[in-house]
Image 1 (cartoon, rainbow, N blue to C red):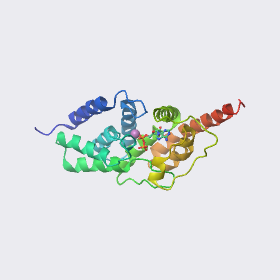
Image 2 (image 1 turned 90 degrees about the vertical axis):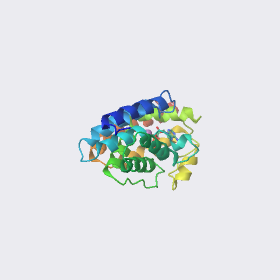
Image 3 (image 1 turned 45 degrees about the vertical axis):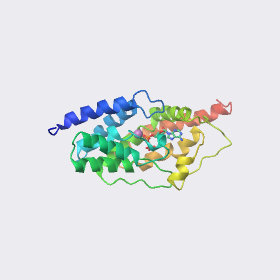
Image 4 (image 1 turned 120 degrees about the horizontal axis):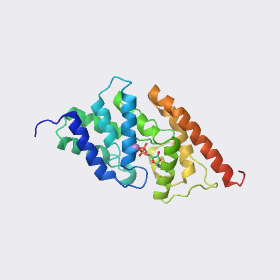
Length: 220
Ligand code: ADP
Ligand code: NI
């Protein structure tokens, strides 16, 4: 097979990811990937970077998420690499995309998640922006329902996890997820473009949770 043009690699990858993730019900569906892809491109045009790597990593970042594979973080990068290899994408691009997917995820309040390239920083920011704001709220409750979590339980306080294992194994209610991850994300972004976008999304989410807690106690 002759080498494909970049646009063909992207097109085929879109079709592949759509096929795999369409109709998924936990907030990790094709439309999450679509938003991350678009946002990653919006950020990427402001930086000098390899756009093909950004787009492929954004499109493939949730192709086999550890949350749905018994916590196995090696499966996502592996599946992505196999796909890119089947398209005969150059080895170095396969490796770079796999590395980004490997490093991307949030792993707990006290666990650092550094990215190794500007392309990785951009995709991580785009993924994190989709976890906050109006869409972030919707995704958190969608995931909570999917994982049979309570909406809220005032008897279970949040915990700021020291390890990825502790974070992964926590089965707490969804309001805790705001304190354990979502409210922390604005200070865990890499690019100035993403930090700017995060300001209003963060504020909106804060107001939402404040109202939620007041309504819970019959105060509003
Ligand atoms: P990451 O790889 O950083 O976990 P994802 O793109 O896989 O990012 O999406 C994570 C999103 O899934 C969260 O932002 C949230 O919307 C949802 N999610 C994950 N864990 C929980 C949880 N315990 N409670 C509620 N939502 C969760
Ligand atoms: Ni994601």
